[in-house]
Image (tube, rainbow, N blue to C red; front, side):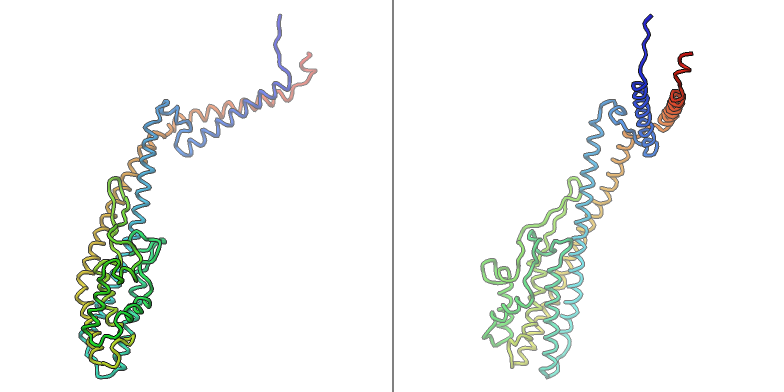
Length: 338
C-alpha cells in the first residue's frame, strides 16, 4: 500500500498559505462592509465595465466644469465689485465737482484738485485688480495689470496739454488722447496694456460658456478715467494762474463723470446677468454630479447580506484553521508511534 505524507516544513507552509488567504479575504470583506462598495468590480459587472467607465468620465468632466464655474464666479464677482466701487466713487465726486460752488480762492481749488487726483489713482488701482492671480480688466493679457500707473498717465497728459491756455482746448486734447486709436500715441498705446476686441471664454457646463469682455479700454471705463484725468490736471499745474479756467476744467471733468454714470451701471448690469448664468450652470452641474454619483454607486455597491454571510463563513474557517494549527503544534513523536 502506498502511503502519502508531507513533512513538517511543508505542512507549516501550507498552513501559512491558508492563513494568509483567509486573512486577506477577511480584510477584503471587512472593507466592503465598511465602504459599501464591492472590491471586485469586474466580477460585480461580469466583465462589462464600459458603462462604469463612461459614468466616471462624465463625473470627472462635470466636476471640472464645476471648478471652471467657481473660478468664473469669483472672476465675475471681482469685476462687479470694482464696477460698483468705481460708480459709487465717481458719481459722488462728479456731483460735488459740478454742483458745489467754489469760492474765489485758489487754496480750495487746489484742495479739490488733490482730491480728484487721489480718486484717479484709486480708480486706476482698482482697474488693475486681480482675482486668483488673474487681472480683471486686461482682456486675454490677464497675467499683467490693465493700466500703467496713474502717475504715468497724468504725466503723459501734462505733456500732451502743455502750452494750452483754455479749458476747452485742454478738454479737447484730453478727449483726443483717450479716444485715439491704436498707433495714435494715445491711451491705448501709452496707458492700456491689455488686449482689444477679444473676450476671455470659460466653459462652465456642457455646451455652456461665459465670456468676459469688459476691459479698462471699454468706453464706459475709459470715459471714467477721462473725466477724472481732466479734473486732476488742475493739480498738475495745467492752466496755472487762470483760476476761472481751472475751475471750468474741473467742472467739465465732473460733468463727464455724471454723463458716464449710466454706462457704468449698464456694464454692471451685464456683469450681473453673467453672474446669474454662472449660478444656473453651477446648479445644473451639482444636479448632474449627484445623478452620476448615484448611478456609479449603484454599479459598485456590494450586497450587505451576501457580504455578511461570506464574512461569517471566513471567520469560521479562520477559527478552524487556528484550532487545527494548535492541535498540530502539540503532536509528539511518541504519540505518533503508538
